[in-house]
Length: 118
Image 1 (cartoon, rainbow, N blue to C red):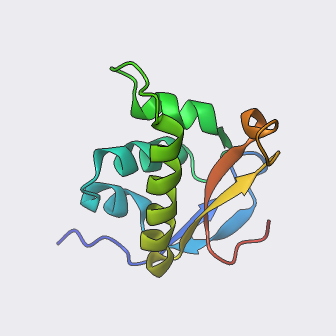
Image 2 (image 1 turned 90 degrees about the vertical axis):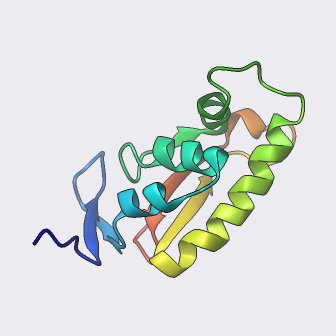
């Protein structure tokens, strides 16, 4: 019988150091119903812990379509909801980089286990 573990250990993609333990991310992605949330998770999970620019995440969502005018707002709302749904499974989406209207291009996100050493 092939049983998937309840907790997996994740390593930093840069240095290989331990970044934490959490539920298997692929099972969470497979269970996600929203195609927008699924695109965000799939992009952030390749590999776990890697920093991804916000613009790259938006491009991953709308890869086959022209980016709608409200894409940034849609992304922000989906990200907020996704963060709440991930927490019970031991995951968080961390924002890094510049804040504010002028620094939005520098904003990066990464998917990491909660409680991991930053």
